[in-house]
Length: 412
Ligand code: ATP
Ligand code: MG
Image (cartoon, rainbow, N blue to C red; front, side, top):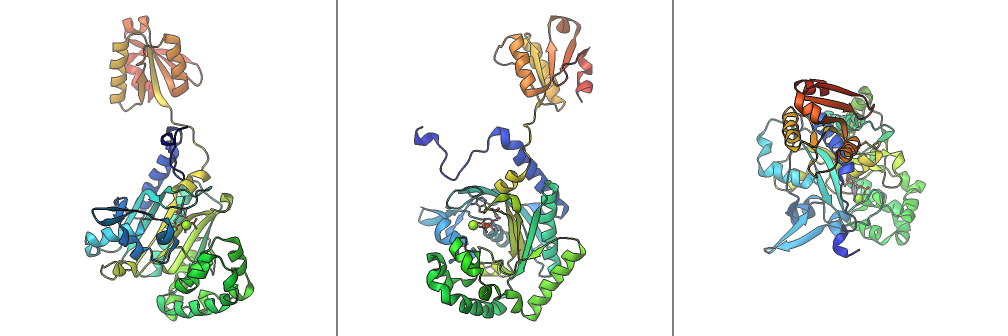
């Protein structure tokens, strides 16, 4: 097939037969996040490149290798690879720090990363996420995690595991980084090229490497034994302990993963991921954490913040397949004008209704009705004359004749 008739590698059409699943996830997000007081925000898909290089971090994979960047009017512009930076930009630009805190925002939409396409990994994918601004206390961390867990529960997803860690603050993390590097240094030559670079620029990110040989090295006891929790300062430790206390009291099950770090630079203190055992190697459905310095770093008032993002394709792949929604009724008739008028009446009453636009034979119309609708509404000669309609239940085959005026009540 000619190249112009193929979607780009790593991108996908979301087809009508799958759209109900997407609507279900989006509607559930709106319902659950609203319960927790979040308002939806829609920011542009394009932003100034520097927002991401400064926000997400110069030394991250996303900024180094994965961004779709182009020039327009001497400006470097990037398709958003994630949405926290954009939401923070909007928070600052629109003076939202003047609003009573916390400010709670949620979003959904496409993100773009130039990654190697594989199961669970696309170049255009979709995320739904939340950001909460203004609260430094661990009660916010607990509520965010609960929001994520309850959203997943409302989707009907169980068997998901919350993994939790604290990255401390820039101060207490320094000592951890130093000790981690000491433990890893003997293996430096055996690490992948990326890790050799990260060793100096961003040693924490070593622990997030997906290369098997590297993972094998980092699983060694002397490296596993160097954990952030041993280096947390009093404040960071108290924050982490209080978060765990809330989660315990609220019956949120979690596992501490003492080497959990995240692919983006902006996190401090709490980081978490939610994973599904049934997803293979791309098994994270949710990643989140606290980013208390990002707002200030991008030029706003110092504002503590925390958030998470979930991959919608991965969520949808975990849901049972939904049958496509059927029309409420299909009008079967050779009296086009009557059919048209009747269809409009029913649509006006809120029903989803079609009638034959293609001049098909009566039997063909009935065939089509049985494929796409719950009821066939038949207007034959007799029905037209008496102002009746024959209603055929397309699941049971049962048919009744009613006054046309009673049809709505019958269908509802
Ligand atoms: P991973 O470790 O799987 O690469 P990540 O740490 O890069 O994930 P985040 O930036 O935290 O991911 O994004 C949050 C969620 O978005 C992930 O948990 C995942 O569900 C989803 N996600 C990230 N990248 C992709 C992608 N390329 N294709 C599909 N979903 C993705
Ligand atoms: Mg990634």
